Figure 1 (cartoon, rainbow, N blue to C red):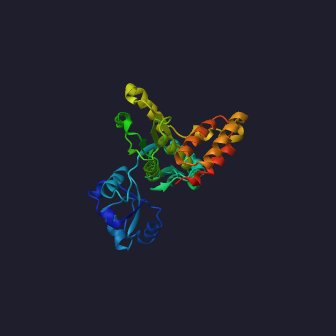
Figure 2 (cartoon, rainbow, N blue to C red):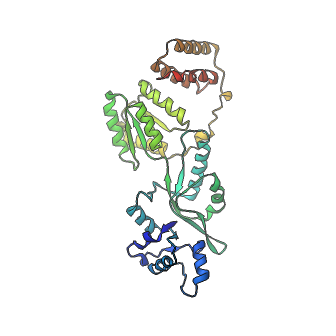
Figure 3 (cartoon, rainbow, N blue to C red):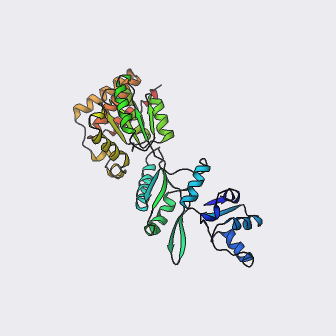
Amino acid sequence: MELAVAVLSKIPDLDNLKLRYDTRDSRIVSMMSSQKDKFSFTGDLTMEFLQFVGSHSHSVVQVVSSPELLAYLRRQMPDQHKTPNKKMPFSQVLELSEEYGRMNDRSRKKRRLTVLQDIYIHEGGRDQKIVSYDTFIADRNVKNLQRHGAAYPGAIDVLDSENGVLVFVPDVKDFKLKVDLFALLAGFDFPIFDSSSVDEALQIYREKSPKMVILTNLEGALESKELLLELEEFDPFVKKLNYTESPSTNREKETKRIEHHYFSGYKEMLETDKEETAKDVLPEQIKNTILASVKELEKNFTKQAFYKKLYALKQFGRYFNIGIYWKMMQGLRSKIK
């Protein structure tokens, strides 16, 4: 990781932290070539080394990140040095980053993993950096990681752009349910976002990128239907749970349910066949009912009726090919004010 000499010089007890600089840094290599008779380049990052570098007009140094150094930087400069929200084995970093890449092609929500440490492996008799600090894992470097990552044994500090749970309780009559949900979620180490407004919930989902959404009374509350449909329009891979009754009646079971849903990957979603052509054809009677419903909505359009009918159509879509009717309904979306 590249750090300013001025920042490194302020680290207390620097000489005892046993930090290392990257001896393959082109600036260091140049100095080693021209100044090897005047300074011993051991690879140890000491105050003496920083003074020598500064005296040759170098303001930054490539440093091999260590847990101690990262902890100091995150504590002293949290705005510039983010704190990871996960530790993952290398295999999981690769698996999840590949899932995110596939999902990002089909969703307006863009998920990403950022590695918050330098990753070196010992290969060919020397240390080789395969991932640099603050690197966004994307298609361009996944192949390199696949080639070399198996040689890295430890867990990796990662910032997952998805983090936390959004709880949506639109009806004040569900206040006890809301309290019980928050009491259950308090046992988890992730952020909890609260909303009772569809617009606010959508804004939170877009800006804060929670990993999961808990809706309440989905079958009865029109606002919950509206939020679910808008979330799925924005992100086909949204993770969601629905509660109509308090989870406090069986806390252990519900804790495991939330834990499983939150921490599981997206493999099952990605492998699910969502092609409309693979589903059964709608029976004629249901076709006629849907067409009549769409025509009625065209004549007497209301936002409430739109979401009610769209949600009902979505249920048919679990079993039948609704492609043409879904497009007809989406054509009416512009009428929403």
